[in-house]
Image (cartoon, rainbow over the protein chains, first blue to last red):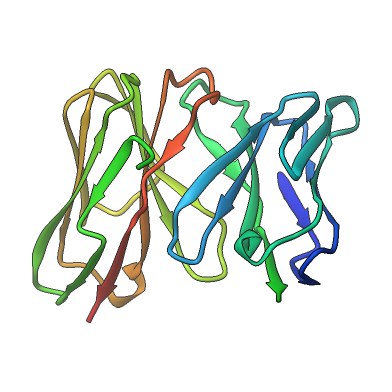
Length: 111
Length: 114
């Protein structure tokens, strides 16, 4: 079955709007983290968030590990927030550092 | 600069060519990875090296051959590729293979096979 599932697949926002991205993950995935891939392909690590809530500027993330989901909040969005947001977790079946990725949410922020 | 450097950024190669992708990390990490990102598909792990020893080969065809001469450098040697191998190839590193805190990706090599 699907181990990491993200929603929505696509999102278009007007600059200044807020948004919430969701990530559901299965029992075989742990140590959730969020990445942002910019239009040039660069994957930037946003949050390492196995549980709890973290904030970094306009971004914050919450993971409820017992319910197997994580949320990424973007407030006062800017055009530079555009790109693809991935959540990923460590595959739990072996100690190989394998990250299991979701399909991503493609965000477009319009000026 | 993310601490993980990949070269080249772009590569176009014919199906009979041999080329190599290079990755270098400056973070003192012990684990290094190759991932493949194809259009409309999630990132897929290809290979894992821990302290220069390969610990995972995720059913990758033999036309892809990794090499890890030391814990800071990782190569992906390519030969007789197919057009469906065209993708973004991403290198990553992490402190160890049992913790993903500090997982860092390079900028990727966009490969086109013609």
